[in-house]
Amino acid sequence: MVGLVSATAAGRRARDRLAAAWPEATRVYDTGGEGGAAGTGAVREAVTRAFSECDRLVCFLATGATVRLIAPLLGGKADDPGVVCVDEAQRYAVALLGGHAGGANDLAHAVAEALPGCRPVVTTATDAADVPGLDTLGLPVEGAVAAVSRAILDGEPVRLVRHSVLPLPALPPNVAETTENATQSDGGPGGRGADDGCALLVSDRAATPGDRTAVLRPPTLAVGVGASRGAPADEVAALVGQALADAGLSPLSVTELATVEAKAGEEGIVEAARRLGVPLRTYPAEELAAVPVPHPSDAPLAAVGTPSVAEAAALLACGEGAELVVPKRKSAPEGRAAMATCAVARRRHRGRLAVVGLGPGARDLLTPRARDELRRASVVVGLDQYVDQIRDLLRPGTRVLESGLGAEEERARTAVAEARAGHAVALIGSGDAGVYAMASPALAEASADIDVVGVPGVTAALAAAALLGAPLGHDHVSISLSDLHTPWEVIERRVRAAAESDLVVTFYNPRSRGRDWQLPKALALLAEHRAPHTPAGVVRNASRPGERTTVTTLGELDPETVDMMTVVTVGNTATRTVAGRMVTPRGYRWQESR
Image 1 (tube, rainbow, N blue to C red):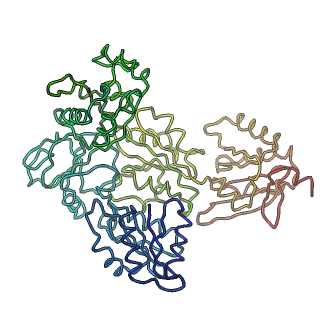
Image 2 (spheres, rainbow, N blue to C red):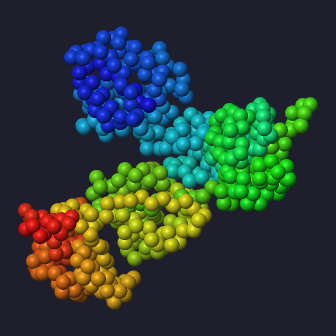
Image 3 (cartoon, one colour):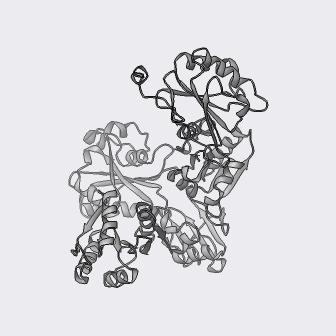
């Protein structure tokens, strides 16, 4: 919840704008003073309440006033809410407190987007240097976080040691991955002494980091738990903790406790999950019974309908390729029989491939999600001219693998191979990656051993249509006239079907130096079913420098004005030209009324 506090009329107007934009996420703290400035006491009371009741706080106050108000309330970095200040003119949203841990940096950007003319002010060192903060990766991190972060920022050599495949965002070139077997030593995990510099370890092993090592805890482990009715929470929690400790595993890498559905309300298991700070996940007995395990038993089969609860639940929670790292073990209470069992499994982490559509070219048509994926990637693969469009958005240290025209399949194979190696990869293409672009060849190469994310983009057809008016207001089809991958006989059949079906048609790849006859042929096929005065549009370099838009007719369209940078749209029998714009009505009744 975001608390909103204001003191003046201008602040209240900005406060109310945010409250209207985020109705489910904000809480307004009234300070009175309607029609004038609120009193200091009312503002102090509102800030104090919001500070204790909300995760984040936006103060429409001067930074100095906000500092004085929150100073007595400060507790610690891990507990304080993020605080953002907005000035009287709403020109700046300043991340004042809790930039990373409190979410103030992200909030400052969000506030700036919601208030016209406002700009975010973020002074966190990693953000200023465009380096991902170790505490912003969505993972538990411990050890010498400040020292290692400082070394990364200062350009000092930092060793990256990964025990777990984990797709990380790009890190600066001074962070170099090593293949050494990290162990606990005088310098902590990393296998070397303190004089060898800083290290960043990615591991679920429970080694104690040294004073120059930070440890990222990947979400690799799941604990399966079985328990008799009435098993005490202390017994279950102690069993889980001891199992992890004996195996040398960090509790921070545990993502869930898992058990059979019949035990979903078992108080001891529920409480053990709460103490560990992870959710409790349950499975039907028949699903658990289908999981091969090394230590099946008749007791759980008779009690809940599956020969294994702990081992089967842990393996099932970790998915395909899971490894059982701690076989089933029983609790050991003094003076009575064990009432709990547990097992630990490790999931096989995969690399990540994001197939990203960059849109038609204009920066403001690049979607926020596409921008986020580019920032998340450590490897970017793409056509050289598309890479040039977004090179400035990439983090320092991003590895760029670019190639020229005609290497689509090679780029797809390269991107998949990099993802299989455990990297976070962005495979980029123009428009929407799934429309005549890189998603198809990439997904044809990618198997289930990597995670694939599709990021939609604004297609060339949509960008051209927006410039032409509303030509796609009714049913429409896109057809590529390139016969490099599709025989012309197939293309001709599709064009003829579109003509007979009275569909609005958008032609991609309409004409090149080596293919100059296909577009006239396609237009002739349409002309068999449409009048010469049917509106047609020609858009070259939509949303790019040199953009040119022409609204003409099917009979007057000159193929000589068309090249591979052009999109051609031909209307259907209902399409009209209105005030120089193509308009296809949503229904045919409009046509009948004219």
